[in-house]
Image 1: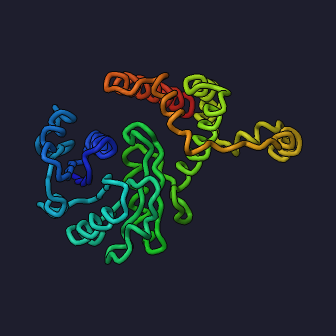
Image 2: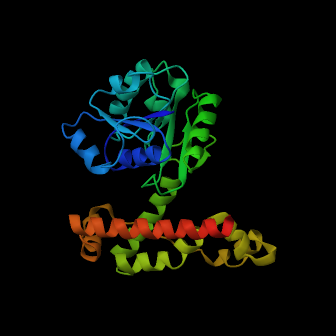
Image 3: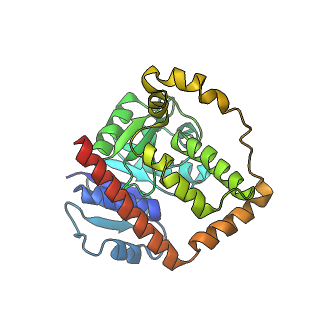
Length: 297
């Protein structure tokens, strides 16, 4: 039986815990918060107390990592502050076996910064999911220059065993790939709302029924190849692409409050709307993934 350690009992950490437990791993969750036991009892009401699929809480990260026979894989999902992650990973390095991969769910920090001065730098890696990791297939694996090939290979093996789609990056870069693309897209979306071109719900409808649907089946480069017809991407860029010479514009940071107000007006900002929208998102995501599996086999 394999044992995973999840560091952090927030939204991402609990989702990782559900993914590992559902795959038959024994799961340890560590978080210093006083209500950890209550959080785990609510999130995993039917989890066994030991064995496959079990979920156990620990206040102390070192104890969680070293208890019994130790752990086989670590997925950190703590605060997005490099000094906190450095401290966490120093603790994990000292409390885990030499071959145990130490993965961070960081969404933007460089693994080399997290591993700075750490004797276990060769096994520290970024395993960045898209939220929620129990549903979204992608895990971006980001090595630092010090990360060993063995650690990358082990991370790929573990994430694939969980039914995820791990994609190792060739080198580290802040924000990785998914969030860099998301940042540019979100900035343009905010600009269009600020300019009064469209509202948040209307923009979301445009994305859902065009780019979102397309990108659920093919990526942007494959889309360019197909968009140019038999002649491919070169034809597209020389013809349609040549007319895309307008200035995209950029949002005004001082006016982002207007955008947030508009989002809240369209979607709410309370517990009930969060739960309702989360349930709808998850149901739609499962439906899309099921449809793709039925086609791709």
